[in-house]
Length: 160
Ligand code: MG
Image: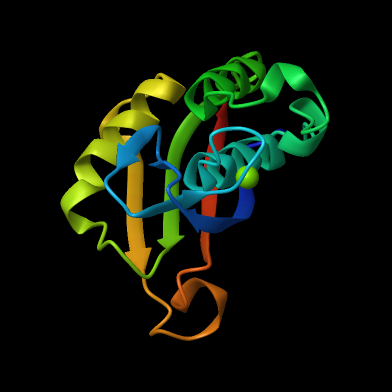
């Protein structure tokens, strides 16, 4: 049976520390703490990249952008997302991306349109195909205690 469409799921989690940059969806979010990571720690784009790779059955970002490779130290996740979009574009067109960020503070609603635009630009798709939502963890657990940021995403791919 020919593929009608494919669905992928991705998730990511990064520890937060004071004095670091918080980058989500390829844009910097004003915050007193940011992600501890080998790259820029953009949990939102990392979850989206894994969703896209998952839908295309092309592995995961740990495999394609190993954190043991000095090339990816401080790497721009937007640039990595561009590479992932190119990888899937051989056979697939991105239908849509829907993501949730789990972060206690700051509230992300004010930054949502910038994040959507950043993701759309990185993936080379229309912003109308990108959805970003945000949740707190009601002050419980590592996210609620502001020790971490997490993200989940799904993506749909259509054959070209
Ligand atoms: Mg990550």
